[in-house]
Image: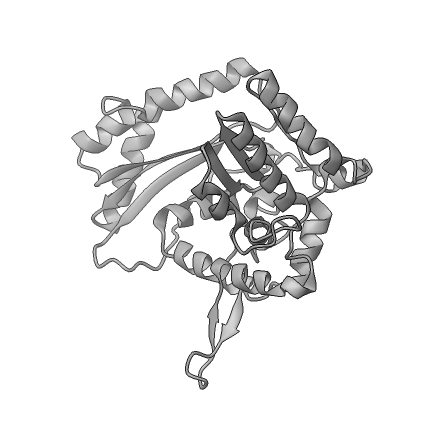
Length: 319
């Protein structure tokens, strides 16, 4: 994402709202009703958006691939006649009673809900502080206050800048006839484009220099719809500032499991035995080029006990 207005999130959902060969409001739900697919999903991370489909039936796999490829490369929302898709997925003004205006839209509603989700707030603040002035510091789902600054033209520009084969990767795997079917469907669409190294260079994610990071402690509040008091203590670290080899990646997975992966793991056990809070907090992002790990505790009863919990967890990590 280039800012916090959620354009990346809106584009992801807009491409799924109809395409040139499937000009209906929600083609994937229509396909799913009669599909044998075993998995279908899309998601947006801080540096990419993924579209995934799987099926064990070859004919069904072909049908799903056709719908997905057409959605990604020939979406309707880029046509001004279908600007309603942007208003549906982004934001819009409504007047239910013809007197008062209200803001609506899927991205705006999702961003407002995220503001009151402790897990979402935690993840956002981790990246905002560990990756200041970096693309990872931006919120791909958008901030509610920023979503309303997004324009239709900005969403179109984002799509045109990043949804190009030179900026993507396609993976076809499984039995050979499934791979052949996948490549057969991809080939004519990819031939519509010319290779452009400049597009990939424009979207290249720089490495965050870890020497710029210093240990710091921050107190962050979030609005909650709950009456209960819920103080939390979380510690987070960036694990690398260059590519890791497979051995190191496996080692970090093992370390994570040893620290918090079971009721008898040291951090988990300390939280229970010392009655530090209600539940263990864990976060392990290993799909981006720079990995992040976080551990902590939720449900701490008072602000004074937050520091006690932090010291107890640090002690376990040091030992």
